[in-house]
Length: 215
Image (tube, rainbow, N blue to C red; front, side, top):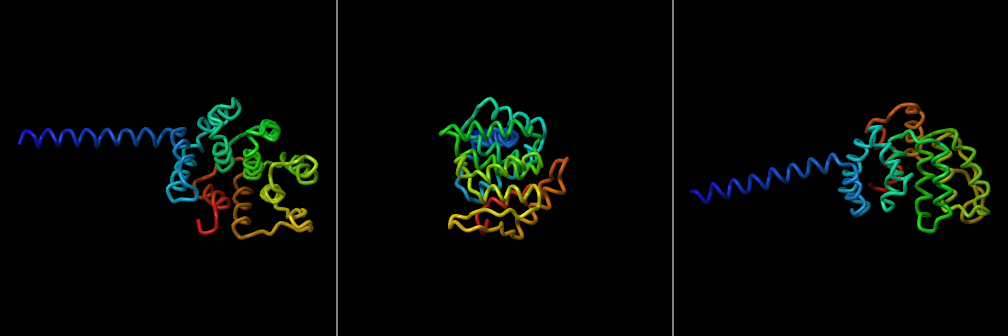
């Protein structure tokens, strides 16, 4: 009987300790980012975790902390996720600072994968001040050796302006951005959320734009 009581006490202690750990992790954005970075993509676990990250990162204090990590080049292995989340949540990022970050990443071989994320974030933020910069990247794409596709650039321009820009595709032919239902819905969310924070439904509409088909 005494042994059973001890076993129950031990099991209960482990259970409650586990609950405390889960609670702490679930409220620690950086811990969630680390877990997300290690998950397979696409996967149900990854997208469930990202939804939790979006909810927490919509807090201005946390968004500012994330942007601080990027500006100070801390946790570099998480920068792609950081930038994606800041774009989805409509964080208040200075236009000049994001353009400066683009320039730094474009000329740093170890950070070039971040360039596409920055282009996407510009579109997600919906700030018209990014338009001249994106138009320059599109016009002088080859000359500037832009480390992002022309499609990514015209998609971001559409999200900001609602205009279907023409561009030269991989076959060397001029084409215009094809607007899917998902892209049109994302554009509406961005237009409707200028100057305010986004709710989780709006954030998930934008998130689905970057998921593979069927996810």
